[in-house]
Length: 256
Ligand code: C5P
Image (cartoon, rainbow, N blue to C red; front, side):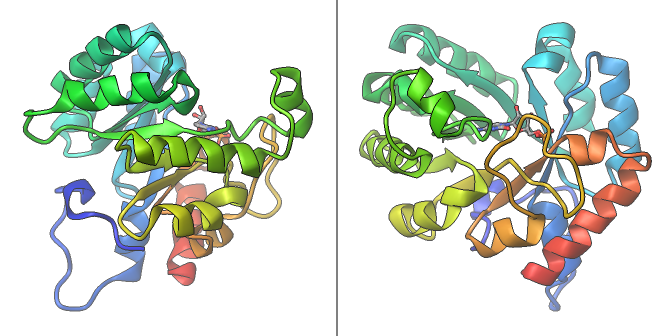
């Protein structure tokens, strides 16, 4: 699936006319900077910035370091995905989305379970802005299996809940979704070729799954229809993070 024009990083010029599959793979990899402070994040960025074009800033880092942590990333030309998984009343989420848009991030998340009114308010909050971030609705967390879902009152398989939430998101005008690799193919056929599917739960063969339950290898996730892959611990906790990133990029390139 092609990356929509608006989400193509401006970091490097495309090697024309030959489309370089390795470069294409780098553009589809998002490294999760799940570290406790700004100095660890910047150290990791410096080690990895030749290998990927996107960094994800999530709750751990954003709560500790604040919006200032984004500036060096953007100053070096990287694309930033702000993963705060917003979930609140529509008015509060709309305000948070506006604030995030001012930071210059290219994608951001909100929980689909916030409901249609919350999703619509988030979309409305971005109307009229130049280069608004892509709103991504998180369907079912990759750490949730059937038992975890049942515990929060949802009977049935994760895939059915992902489908229900994605249909609701589409109705509310959302065109980006986060799911596990297991639902990527279903989501791609449901949402069409233009939608942005951001897929975490990526585990190269032989790496630990940790708390993730619904996982796949980088190559498999791309073959299932992912636009972007999100990878955290297989890179950040590797002995050689840059080497681990390059191995993932090579596997991705083979699948493209
Ligand atoms: O370390 P790991 O590769 O499991 O990291 C996955 C990243 O993707 C984490 O930052 C996590 O917050 C995020 N994420 C996820 N599942 C979702 C949405 C985001 O694992 N549904």
